[in-house]
Image 1 (cartoon, rainbow, N blue to C red):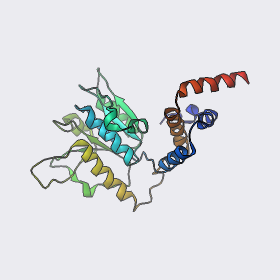
Image 2 (spheres, rainbow, N blue to C red):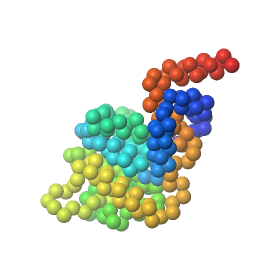
Image 3 (spheres, one colour):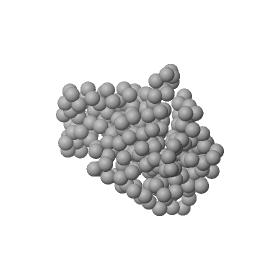
Image 4 (cartoon, rainbow, N blue to C red):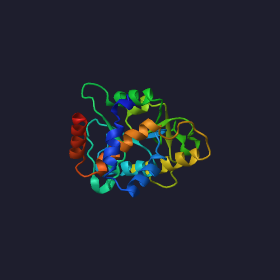
Length: 233
């Protein structure tokens, strides 16, 4: 995750904290206590912004801190009417490489963080969601609305997983699929003792500061004043 401590300023956190209500601080601490990077979601070349935005909301609801977006032909833009503010709480990571592979950019990053990468696909080699194990770090890849995950992704993931269908339709909407997968994984973790499942304190500190900045009106001016006061002392 980089040098987290070097980006954190406790004094600035305390300074901005003056303008955050006790109620909001309490809610932030309750959310932080349940936040995780044990699971993450990857979206590949999504056509419709409202679908990707709905997944951001899903991630926030299940305590997932990061969403990764692989951009190929489609650039992702947040739809605020769909996210309903969730985009300010979830970290969005975009990957675009016009001279190479955006998939490799994303997957190299994820594997460097210890994730097992699983593509969601009804492919015959895919395992059902019931066999998905939650005791290892998992990145779930969802493809676009028309074709699902690309052949490139299928060839580079560590495995495939699917939700069994009982009707004529082959798959759920992307946000619905993400919700089912994340609900299943989170439920499975309740029966496991997973070390470091939740965020470390230094990660929480960075998020506290980020969230305080998003909550406080004109936080940029407050931050400027804080820095000027530091120089004057």
